Length: 141
Image 1 (cartoon, rainbow, N blue to C red):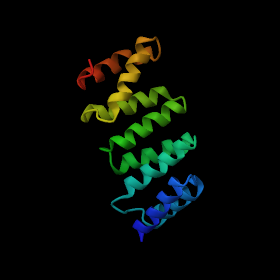
Image 2 (image 1 turned 180 degrees about the horizontal axis):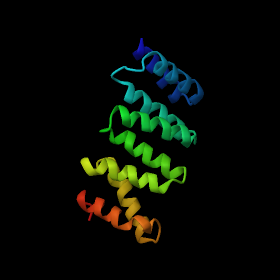
Image 3 (image 1 turned 30 degrees about the vertical axis):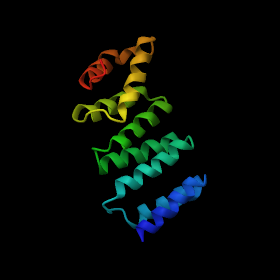
Image 4 (image 1 turned 90 degrees about the vertical axis):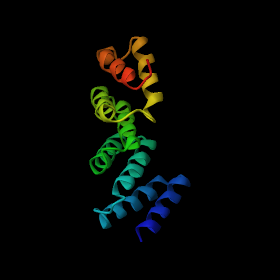
C-alpha cells in the first residue's frame, strides 16, 4: 500500500499539484512512521516544501530525513539549501560540516565551489577557514 501511496504523491508532485502531494506524503508518514523507507519519504516531502518556498517545513522534514538516515547526501544538501534560503547561514555551514566530516562530496561539490566563489567575492567570510578546509579535504583546492 505504501508504494501505491508514494506513487500517487509523486504523480501529484510531477503534475505541479504540491498540496495534494504533501497531503499524500503526510498520510504515508502517519500510517507508516517506522517504515524502512521513511527517510526517503521525508526527503521527498521536504523537497516539495523547499520547491514551494516553505523553508521552515523543508528544514523540519530534511532534519527528520537525516535523523532517519544520517548518510543521505541528498537530505543533507536539501537541508543546507533550505537553511541558506531561510537566512540561517550558520546552521547551513554546520550541516555542511557535519555531512562532509565523514563523507566525500558528490552532490555537494558544485555547492562547495559556489561557496568558495562567494567567500572569494567577500561573502560568508566568517566561515572562510572552515569552507576552504572542507574544500581541500574534498579535492577542490
